Picture: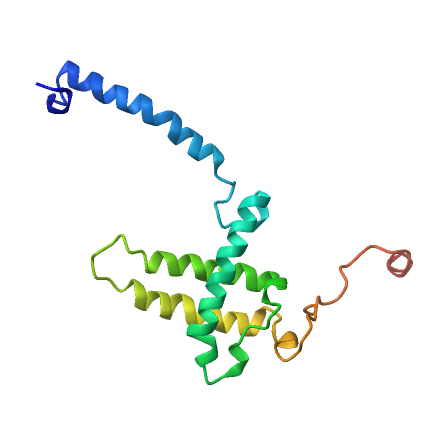
Length: 167
């Protein structure tokens, strides 16, 4: 009986299985340790080279999204301005949309499912609505240059004037 034909429950079979586990385990630990904290899509913790790769992937996804959906919508207010990548909310939401798209269109699963409908109904349209309302893109949409989104009022600070007023 060759090693491939070993009874997995025999001493020899268990020994062969243990050798396989001992061989694979260090690689698994290395893979785990190399992952960025927060995962491969958490911008705040990505090392520079991984961030560059994610920027490239996101740019390709946004180019596809624009050509497939946004340029075909009757409402131009959903269009992304050329400076979308300078809007933090847009970056985060488009990254999430890209990741959801990948999961929905994962070709490893041959089973029919509602994942594609779910992506459209639960990810695409709500994300487009959110971008339109919250990402600060409207000020840039019909311009050739970037305009910083409204940052709101200045953060509160205890000042001398404040202290004189309250005392």
